[in-house]
Image (cartoon, rainbow, N blue to C red; front, side, top):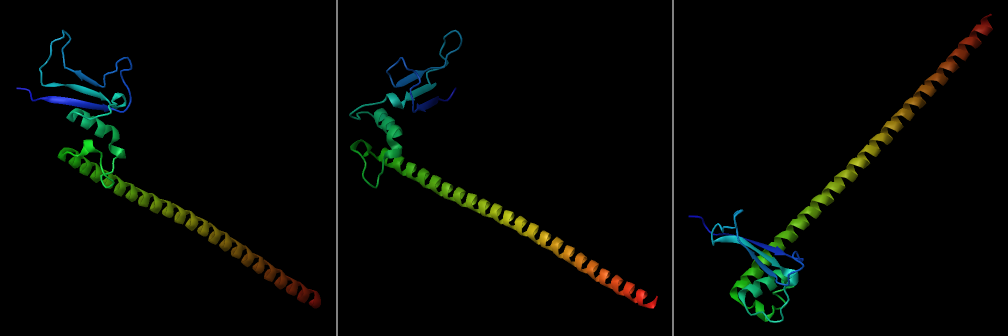
Length: 166
């Protein structure tokens, strides 16, 4: 009644150092060692250990694709082992993912640029506001000084007038 369920783990580095095999198949068992069923398990593929001069099987073709996919360029020409319909489709899918990732990276770069520009503008606005406030304070201080000097002159004139009358 259970549907088949497999997990495929692609590992770039070596996980099981004391074993030269690059494919490890694990079954799901209970604590008494009984297998749940023959339609589930984990395939662990250590790509670092996979080195073959000639691709002969579909499994090897896919492993080589997963190992070298980021360095393949279908516009510059693909190696012979990539000339199947499945591999051309895989390259098409990889290209679409790469294009979307580049578009996303460009979008993020633009968003970061805009955020930086807003931050710079905000800092400039704050600096401009601080300068305007300092200028206003300076003008108010000059106006107070001018008013004080005018008051001194008025008092001097009043004092001089009082001295002449006495």
